[in-house]
Length: 595
Image 1 (cartoon, rainbow, N blue to C red):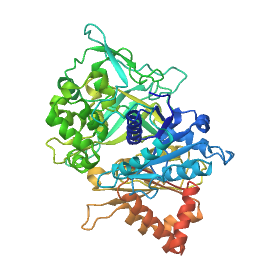
Image 2: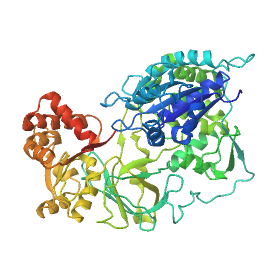
Image 3: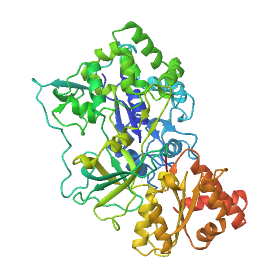
Image 4: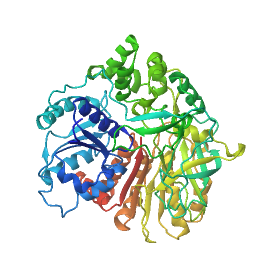
């Protein structure tokens, strides 16, 4: 390999952008080009001026926000004092990943592309805008864009003389080697070292929080199992405010660990030491050294996740079975993406199920390739549903247990929610690795600023924390629009809201969608209470909040709010849209939605 000349930087929230960045790195190595792949916040951004060619891979999360692992870079690159010639020596390309059902589709990629041009960078291509909503997913835009990108890259960085490209069917060297230790000692469960007394818990050092209670809060006949979970954080040093989120690191079930090890011929109790092949690479900080196969598979490898195309590419290059290899090559080719979508993405087939379908290939996977093959389990974020002012030393979350059917035999299950639901502190001590970080919602501290909160379903969770906090501080003007299906099935915290309403601390507006012939949702109630909403926002400077499922509710609530501005404020359509934009800029309209 030549010395690194190509740099790929990614900002990724769910792992998709990181996967695409790693794909770029593999394709560069096949072309005999040196290539570094790094998250944006792990790269010293001041060195950017010295890079000849940089490819940025950026997801857009939430309401047009940059992912967490590029927020420091984002702040730096938009500094107003950066000279307009800062990047005049840099050729670049931007690949974006987004979802066109959101208003700010690929906002981060578009804005970054413009900013790099402002700083003097030379764009190799227009920005690529991958779309989750496309029938074939982001690859529909990425594949043709990459073909053109490599033409541009190789004009600037030709492959070393005398070396031909490594063909797709030949596996690249693995990133790591697993050196198995002699014997198979039974090891105790390996945990990350706890956070020290002066450092807050983090992903690398989570707090092992004792679970205090795990209570189902929907009726026994209700279609959705929703849990109220409470954790004891008194000794954690964790502090949080309304709007913050807790991240929880889930693990795979024991049956999945056993099945995976049987398929690949691994001994779960075997210990190994991990070593990187490249001299400047580092081992994943979350893995202990030495590590057991059980720990690797149970707590690190996302065997229950839906695999990306890269898994099929690597399996095809490792497969000794002609029939399986042929099918894997089809799934990993540009022309086979429709077939892959039908086989894997649409029915939500998991990594483990794919390996079961290709047993000869699975049995031949060298252990060294496990970390190349399967991405790590990502933590899940939950809105904190309680306040330390009201519940000192405790942290509560509201969790909808994800389980649904596709055409596959087994139901699809959410890894984290099903794992949490299975834990029973009544049967003995239960500990859950967690840490806290700021969320996207912030609430006014002034005593007389009202808040209007729209939280249907589990979207009400962050507003419970806010209401507890505000009531304890004597803050008035708390208005909650809550929606669910039926009063007696999924009306979360009904008694608590009614008591606060009785005390004059809360104005509560409810929408029970299934209790009448025509469905009634929170957006309908918002329109009905238009005079109150307009008075609070326009006359009293209220903040407006929205939280919940991202499917269609956010757009419908926003549309209802805009119609209130028109009907109650006498604004025209364009003026109402401008008024809403002004609220967003002043952080008086905030939303936290999830898929």
